[in-house]
Length: 133
Image 1 (cartoon, helix red, strand yellow):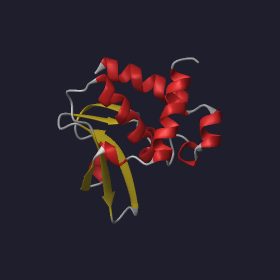
Image 2: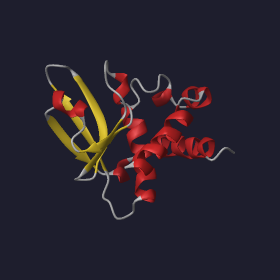
Image 3: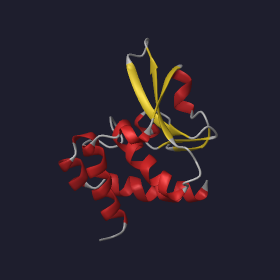
């Protein structure tokens, strides 16, 4: 888990760069409103880091809250890279489900291959910032 936490920290620093928010609307107020963009992108990085794990995006919803939220799971672990957009939450790496899932009982698994081209373009630029180039 420590390796995932370290990668998440580097990803978040890059995603907070003003040029990422300016170029990609999904990161304009990172982490607020960035869960889909960040989960798809970070999920792709996790697939590279841990090719034996089967990471997927989870979309959780609650009709009473009128909001959805996305995070990553692999059947054992969960990563919620934007949990801190909610009051009293921190980014999460740990056993599934993440704390943000408690308020979102309706959950849909989404394959990471469903990432749109803009999600992948943002990942390319974030990866570039993460490498220090």
